[in-house]
Length: 260
Image (cartoon, rainbow, N blue to C red; front, side, top):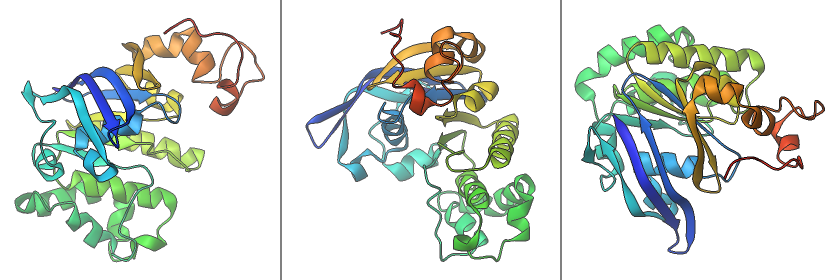
């Protein structure tokens, strides 16, 4: 079990971004973390993956535990060695490296399992096997997202943290990424999925958390969140004013929320 308990995060010793959030990611489950831009979702992932210090951030209260043992003071590399790997928003592949070179970089904490994990990644992502010698910078957006996910899997993680994997992708590719997340999870990897595409995330998650301004304001089963009138209106763009089609419209909608 990966757990966050009453976590507070401050940037530059001044800006309080996370305000006591708690969440759990059980082994082998998909958990969705939803919310608008600026809600604190990416900061939560940075805390989990040990990357806060790169952004002048610091945990000032609370803890992160893995199987009950605190890990929030671990370095990023030790967190990866512990079985937690993040795929950052925007892919972040090494553009001048080949596909296979990118994948091999992902195995830096698990050299002994490199060959086995490389076979696993190529099995999950056949297009990467076909293009293993291609330069990463010339891949399509969908292929780069698959490469970023494959690179993260090269460490053999127990938990995969995904930050907006569908961002900027066409609907057909979003569906493909969705199916790949399900397949990765079916092989035993727990997933914490940060997404603004709430419908996609909740359709495959077991449980969901909704964040606003650094706080968790909803914590329910994914099916319950999908059926909730407020979530449908404010996060899925459904219900209420039928003219509302996207979160950009929803966030300016005038009906007052009934939570928080």
